[in-house]
Amino acid sequence: MKELILNDLFNNNKNALNPDLINSHINDVKQMMLIHYSGIKEVETKLDILNQEFQIQEQRNPIEYVKSRVKSLESITQKLRRRNLPISTKSAVENLHDIAGVRVICSFVDDIYHVAEMLKKQDDITVIEEKDYIKNPKKNGYRSYHLVVEVPVFFSACMRMVKVEVQIRTIAMDFWASLEHKLFYRKDDLDHSSEEVYKKLLKCAQVISQTDLEMQEIRNMVSEIE
Image (cartoon, rainbow, N blue to C red):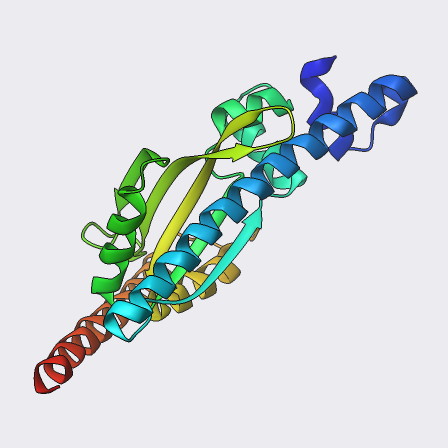
């Protein structure tokens, strides 16, 4: 019964559970969400400090802005189901790396790698996974730098290591990825792999990538002049 908690809650199948069990399971979900929200705040604080330090040392900010979210219960349940994993809070925490997500938007490509390196060097951060989709874009043209890190979060009675997925990208990369997501999110009737759609997406991604490189070159030229 415990393993069915997320599935039961998502489907509002409360008749299958007695009231005490319902409350217990809801508390499990709330605790899971709190832990991951707290992990996000830890990472956001680190990024804010690094950005301010860079402002003092270099007189500019590598980070334009930061977005974050805790994955919804519905999305968690669906992802576990797709992977044929137990539908429970325990299973979600153990198997999913992206319940807590932080997106870092930078001005220039060089800033992405600089921010990633500064974050990875922190003693209390453990890098679980690292993927460079900038040097190795996905087939459809998607570009971003992904890190899955573990950060310590201190509560009143214990310390928990919390996994947080960090995506670092430029404004242009984020623009492309956001629109691509809106086009295909839950659109089962659209063929994402159709040749025409694929070619147009890839062409847009290549144009955006070239723009990023040219803006980086211009910034380097301006820096040399200064």
